[in-house]
Image (cartoon, rainbow, N blue to C red; front, side):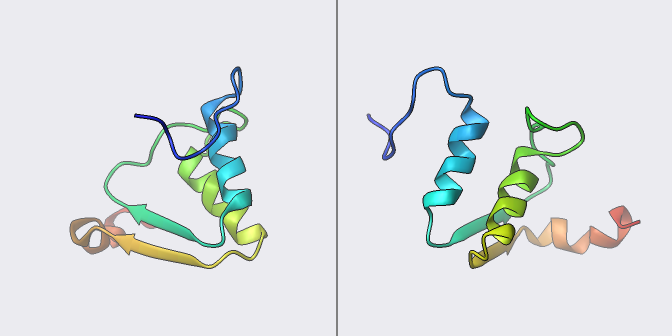
Length: 79
């Protein structure tokens, strides 16, 4: 099975994700319990967070789905 996008050999998968955001008309954010892998270019930021920031900076519409248990636990983890 082939992916529905062009994969440039030698390009980091995180960059491929950000390139996909650049090409997208809108973004869908799915939030669950795990934070996600650390973005290769910045310490302390997940690839998901970097994708979100990229979409926001480009003014892309974002549709967000949050797992109910994660939503209910949000106060436990807020600062």
